Every structure is written in C-alpha cells, then in structure tokens.
Length: 352
Image 1: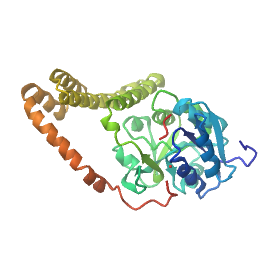
Image 2: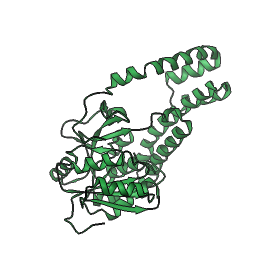
Image 3: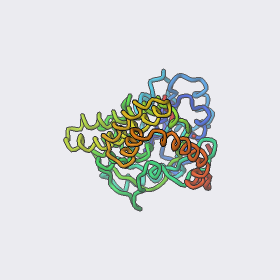
Image 4: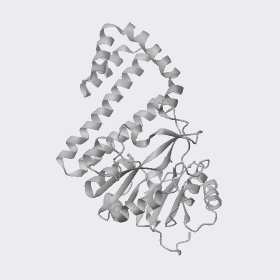
C-alpha cells in the first residue's frame, strides 16, 4: 500500500464485503472527482480475492486508491480499519455499493474551509433503486420525512438529530472531531450515533446539496419480520447508548421521543402480523401496546375494531393489501423513480 505520495486532504473510508457487482462504480465515482485532493481506502473486509482484484483493476493504477485486507470484522470494524490508515484531515465514509457525485470532495472541502469552526458537514443524497440508475425525485432527507435545509446550510443540534433530522451517512468530518466522537462503534447504527455525538460535541452543518447516490438494494426489508425487528432494536439501542453516555438529562428525555415512535410502529406491525396469522389475542395485546406508546386515533381505532368487530378488519386488510400492491408502480412514478440521471459516473450500504 503506497503511502509515499502527497498527503491528501480528504480520505474516503470504504469497507467492502460481497459487493463485487457495485464496487467498480464506487471507485469510478471517486476517480471522477473534480478535486484531486483525496484518497480512497478500500478495506477488503473478508480477504476476498475478488474484491482485491477489483480494487487493483478499477483503481487504474492510481496511487490514491489504497487497499487494506483483513478478516471480516463487521461493518464498523471495516470503517475503523480504513480510518486507522487514512492520511486525510477530513474523513468520509462511503459504502462499497454507493457513489459520490463529481463535486463531492470539492464542495465538502470548500465548505469546511469557509467554516473553520465546523467539525463536520453533512449533505443530502439522491436515492437510486437497484437495477435502475436513474434517481428518485425524493432525496435521502425527504425519504426520512425531513425537510432539506435552506440554501447555505444550517447548524444541526442534538435535538434535531434525535428528532429524525439525520444527515446522509457520507459527509465530511474533520479528523479531530471524528476521534473525539469515537468514530464508528459496532452493534448499533454507527452513522446515527456518530452524528449525535458530533452534534453534541462540535459544530455540525447540514447543507442541501445532493452529493451522493444511495443505492436502495433490498426492497424486501419491510416484508422480513426478523430483519425489521433487528434494525429497530439496533436503532433504539443507538438512541439509548447516546442518552446513557451523554451526561445531559435533557438528552435522555429527548431520546424517549424516537424510541417511543419506534415502539409504536413496531407494536402496530406486530398486531398486523398476529391478525394475519389468526391470533386475535396477540393482535389485541400489540394494538393496546401501540396505543400506550402513542395514543393516536389509528391505534385507538384498531384496538376498538379488534375488540368489537374483527370481521371488519378481516375484510379491510386484504383490500388494503391489494391497493398497496396495485399502487406500488404508481408510487414509483409519483415519487420520481425514473427521473433523469444525475451527472455522475455510472453504477456503486455495505453491511458486513
């Protein structure tokens, strides 16, 4: 691994595991940067000869593309292995199936130069459905129900992030801020925890620029109960870990908001699954739990219908399912799948 060249200002940290089909596009998007002041550290997170070969060929002999090989240490372990050898003063995590637009490095570095007090800058991203390189009209921030920031950006608070205003995971973090925040930790949603800690300990800006392309690879997550539950547990644990270690009682109180929202949606989903399986007692129990977490009209109506008229739900649920399936293609059109492509190299979250 060549470390004799000029020291770059920005280091992309890319763990790679079973993403052979996408990694060439990720590397190409970095090679296409308008600013040359970068390096790309790819961690072969599993000692895969195929990954190593792709890095060497797609890197086109550019010494700024560096390869680290190791046993699989998980996603966070791959990111931290890249951070350990990175030479840049600004660190940017980039998964091995996602991409950055050509102006990413130039925009991030220029913003940090213009805001010397900022410890990090976050951005928005285009969403790209796997198999269709054309981005959605909805961005990352819009997809999580958050409004894009005003032109020029805005400063993020812990309250903002806990409330769901989470920047896209690929941003620019000054090394000292990264190290103070502890980088990526295993077993939780590392990017969310990092943004929380950065917002607590330093000045974090969020800009409206869509500087990356996030690939939506698995459309079946919402239909896989185990994966949904695992993700929600991880996200709730992330909020709890931050609140426990924050030292600020306000953060513990604020963190209860997103945790209760997650538990509410989790209970509603469990009620639906139990109802479909014919277990009315479990469906009623989960519906009551949802109402306890958030006393919404929806939860209350489900509790009442399950108690008084489950047959009505029996008729409503299949109709709702048919409408949802029939409306999937329409939703794609309305939300913008199929809009013109962004000016970025073709084809690029790796979760080991």
